[in-house]
Image (tube, rainbow, N blue to C red):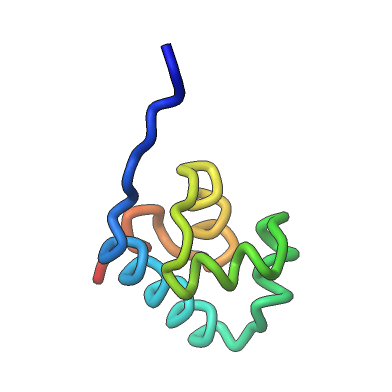
Length: 77
């Protein structure tokens, strides 16, 4: 059995990233601060905000906590 390739949903990733960026700016914090609060790199957070990468459920959970919103609110586009 080989590796199974999957395609991520680019539209969903873009919308999610824009939502994270919007909420971060609403709080008045930098990417560096949010990355620190969620224990991810600034470059990874930037890739999330630009919709370049998919992310994990655990990262979404940490983002929701750091942004002081419910998990589901990150998907309220």
